[in-house]
Length: 462
Image (tube, rainbow, N blue to C red; front, side, top):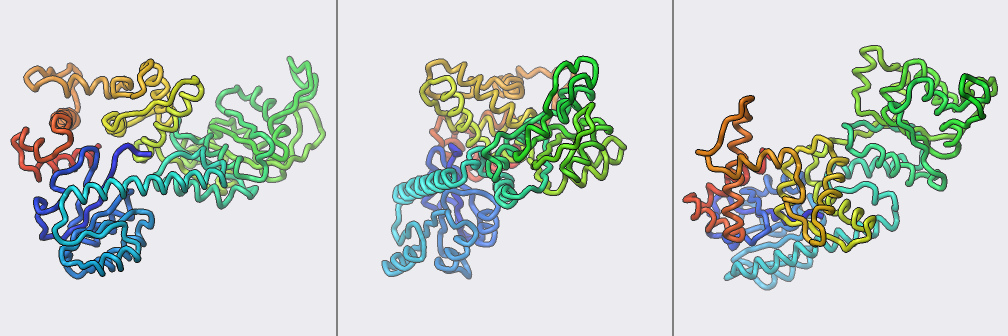
């Protein structure tokens, strides 16, 4: 799960930030303030927060009304309600309605901090229990790691179609985990008692790919010294995964179309028709509709494959999945190497969450494996254990002063460079003040509100 803690604060548009018990932000906690209930509910539906603090009075809203609407937007978010005019009876009533905690008049920041920490831990323990329960009931769920809406949608599709024989076409960039989704689909199906048969259609030349898929009889061609069973025959009563289907030659595409239509084929060199009961899963990192337009992929085959489309977004579009993926890969590597579990710092998670990950999940897994190796006997992983290209090139820019910055011969991205420099200064100030935004703002000769605005701006452009 994410190492960062995100709290949604809902307050009146007229509320001054310095009047809030949250004016001294706790280290490691990110606060996003919505100045209207409508805005807060919209954020709650779009993002994941580990707790919600609503500070009354809020015009046209009662604590009970906000609690009802908020729980409808996110049923698992703990709601903490602060109302200086509230009574003990209000506290009892709202707690029964589902509020995690109710604060009355005279509430100190320390009390809010204590209850927020408790709310964060409550949500995380609840999610962990639900995940463990789901994994025990749905073993395939452990393949699909992440908390993003994209992963939730993919899990929903898997549940809907896993027991059926319909073909699924999984699309996405290289390294996004298309085969992992295919394996989850197979594991959730009624065919999971047999192994998934997988083949990469771009890894073999046309003559070998045809023999690999359909098999051949002895003497069918030069070098065919033995009888061979093809992958489709091996996948009888199971599932076959055709990776990089867009690279399959046109002649083979016609033969594949017949297999999808009739569930039968012939081995090379044989006139015997073999019928198979198979479930076909295909994947492509190319735009098959573009290939159809260019005459590189059969249109009829495309529609046969694209019965249930599943698109896997690149990792840069679901950065909220990174913390869970990192922990998943750390646990995986540590088990494989038979070493003690390791953990990653919040600062490291923040750095990795700003990286574009051109190689997607596959690159992240390799980076984690490298970090575990470079960390030696250390239990904690730091940013230096992840020497990724953009982080390495960004370091000189953010580490030097402006007077020492030299313009490369091939130029640079001005906005990115300035943003990197600004981010580094803000992060250093927050580290030196243990996350206290007010003291960090004083150190940088800024207003606290200006510092908060800059941090939000940098987060939005990350």
